Amino acid sequence: MAKAWIAWSRWFLLAALACAGLLLGFVAALDPFGMRVHAGQAARPIMDINQRYMYPQLVRSGAFDAAIVGTSTMRLIDPQALSRDLGARFVNLAMNAATPWEQTQAARLFREHAAAPRWLIWGLDATWCEADATDPAKRLTPRPVPAWFTREVRWFDWLNLMNLTNLEIAGRLFAYRLGLGPERIRGDGYAVFTPPEGSYDLARARGHIYGSAGEPPAELAPLPPQPVPAAERAGWRFPALDWLEEVLASYPKSTRLMLVLPPSHVAAFPREGSVAGQRHDACKAAIVALARRHGAMVVDYAHASPVTTQDANYWDNLHFRLPIAQRVEAELAEIAKGGPPLPDAAARVSR
Image (cartoon, rainbow, N blue to C red):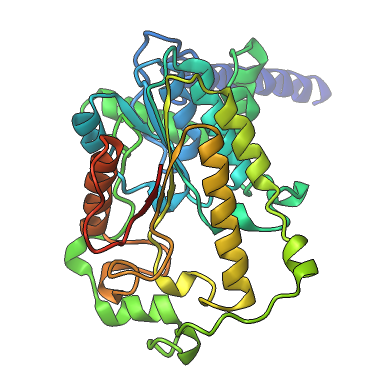
C-alpha cells in the first residue's frame, strides 16, 4: 500500500508540474501584457479591462510620439482626434484613480521610450493639491502596475504571471487571435468607459452629483472671500507639484507641454471664496508658475463655467459625457495650435 501511494504521489506531482509548465508556456507564448515588446514591435491587442496593466507595452513599442496622462477625467479624450489635429501619434495613458505618483511613472516611462516626444498633455486633478499627496500610503492604488512591467523582462518575471486572472487574459487574447472576440481597449489606449449615451438619465446623474437629495445644496453658491491668516496661507504646501516639475524638466525643450485642469462638475470643487476654495486657487496659481518655468501652457477648466455648472453634461461630479469630451479635445487642439479658446470662457489659458 505504501509503495502504491508513493507511486501515485510521484505521478500526480509530475502531472501537476507538466500541467503548470503547459499553462506557463501558453501564457508566455501569447504574452498578453507585451512583456517582450520592444521599439519597432507591435503591442499586443489590449484584452485586460484594467487598462493600467496594458499601457507599458504601448509605450515600449515606440509607436507613439505624444501622450495623454492623468486619471479617468482624461480617459475620454480621444488620441485619434488629437493625432489628426496636431499631426502627432498620440496614446492615452490616463488611468482610473491614478495617484500623482503613478501618473509621474507613466510620464517617465513615456519619456524613456519615446525617441523624440512631441507632445505631453497632462490632466491634473485636485489630488495634486492635497497636502499629503506624497505620503507613502498615497503613492499607489490597490492595483499598482508591477515594476517588472516597465523594465526589461527577466526569465523569473514570467513566474509572476501564473495566476487564474492572467490565464483568463491569455485565453481572451487567444480567442481574439481566432477571430472570436474584439479588443477590450483600442490599441492607442482609448476606450469609452462611461455608460452608453442612450442610457443617460438626468435624474440619476443628479443623484450621483449631489447625493440622495438630487438637488444642488445651498453651500455651492460662492462666498465672499473668507479671511485667511497670513501664517496659514504661508503654510499651504502642494508637495506633489515637486514631482510634476521634476518630470517636466526631464523632457527635451522640443516637447510641447500642456497641463490641463479637467472640467469636473462644479460640485467637485471647493466652494468659491471659502478657505478651501482659496487654497485651491493658490494651488492653481502654483501650477501656472511651474508651467511658465518649463515653457508649458495651462488650460484650466476647473472653475464655474457654462460647462461645469450644467448637470446634463455629467454622469457624476467628476466624469463628463462624450459631447463634452469631444468639445474639450477639439478645444485643446485649437489652443495647442495657438488659437483662442471658445468664447464661453470655460477654458482659461495661460501660456
